[in-house]
Length: 153
Image (cartoon, rainbow, N blue to C red; front, side):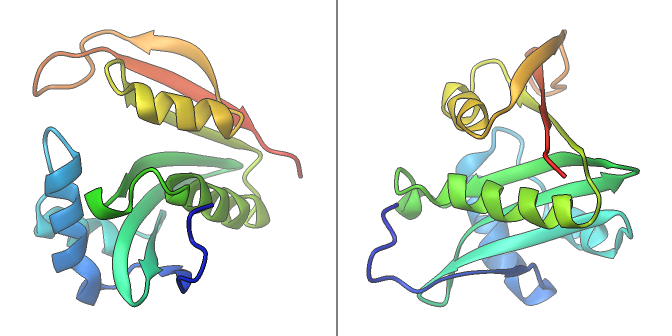
């Protein structure tokens, strides 16, 4: 999966990671979150955030909110230098397994209609489209595609 010879680690996100996380966020998202917003998320009881470390450097992150029997994916990003190496799939796989072990039977997410790379990843992970949310994104009124995945218990 592109990680041959590299030390790849998944672990909970820490405040100490936020400078690197915000850098990835700015390089990845049309409306990037601030460091303060990530700090808020880390304090949220239902929120679970993880980082992917490659050779000791934060290469990506993912977060989801836990609801009864559900994992609602909030965000996922892989840094520009680490893309197209299978890390997005590995990050999703790790988080979905974590959520499943905590009782999630369903994973849900919204993705920008224009983000075809993310949609392809989610489909590869077993997600399917169930709805369109019109003008969901406030920065440009873009529609969101709602996707779900039933997880085996």
